Length: 628
Image (cartoon, rainbow, N blue to C red; front, side):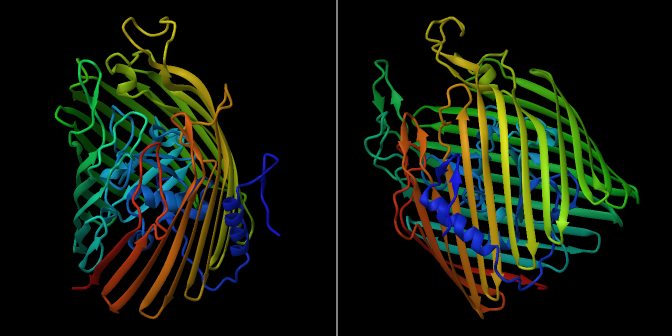
């Protein structure tokens, strides 16, 4: 008999089922060995995953290629335990929570460059395509001492493909329900001192109405709210001498997504009939150099610019543009075997312009970071400190200390503690009749402990964590008219404290052609002053997946189960989504893919009054050839 109790209460039935499966997977027979992945995000320099004291999830290229996820954000939910809230189906605005932290409490990087809007303080993952991505690393836990502001929940680092070896061409096309279609083509490789990689892709879908009939604000419009997304990225590298590489990267995405809203007349009567659209262009350009100066010293220099240009509305269009200019100089000193010191300087300048700001806001940040990682008497140690000095919200010091120890072959325990802060966004500071220029950053203190086990093709992991966040930035309704400036009907304020605590479990087992995986996330995210659960956070979320390969055929299925969560004064019911898929590799370089998403056609309400897609079938073809 298998059962789980939490805080003295029996866990939800779905969570108990997942935990039982996790336990059973842990005792499967080990059939083959697996290579230890090398990760960058945990220390800012390459490090074996097994040597990290942090909680890091790697989503590799094969997983991304074979996924049935409809988007980057859905992929992250399935494989990294990130909770997702989306205003409708694919292409709609998304929020994401790592360990219960707010969306703007998560840093998102692409090839080391911070992306996202300086006004909203978050990255628009819905603008990215899976076709652009080689692999993803997710650091769950405190990260401000490595990457600065907003690393409260963690870091999502997306890596695009880099060319290597003989030329490789990839491509695919697919059609699906709701008049959906997608296609992409890529080429990569290297020749002498030059390496190259390029990808272009498109996706579009008719979708469904983003809002369900009978919503609380009368915004429902029966038209379909689809999207079109076009993406492209290129990376070139030149290696003038062994150990020295100069790189250039450019990435661009264009999203045109319909959504439901309303325009109001002088009497405040709502008109939801216009065709509301969100047109978002994102451009990232970077140049970098990495060189092994001596056997003891590796240096990296990167310059980058990120542009987010948003135009949204119905008959009246609002435009908002933000720029991020980033410069990083990083040095890794190899002090001995398994001993490394990282010293980094970062400069970040943020600017915004648009219809909502009478004066264009801007700010700059200078930061120094020092980190150590290494082995000492069989103990893995990691320590880092960082000092940020911002022209608007002042200076902040953060630190992190981690420890790990291998008890037996493949069995490791670890512990980590750190401090974090989240910077107020330009909207928090300057948005008309809302922003308050004197806001303080949010501050967090986080601790965690975990255990991991790897034996051949069998693996399991568990982590428990607790994070206390103070000075939460929220909305103060100011009922007495004493806190906000005259004429404001409420304003931004440091309103409360939060308690974010929980546990994550994962297990995987391979046996011949069968691959089993399961995750379970338990979360208690509450207002520390009132004890009320934070909006849109589910108390539990679990995933189950099974794949089987035999000769040219592969079949599989997955389950994502999300618990109930409060939103807008009501409690949204939990939901489960089942996907199934099959692949036929009819030639060594060609395959046919078929998948059925939301196979049971369950109703999905990711956010109050919004709806996801129903059952959707896809059929596609893919080519992957090397040495052409």
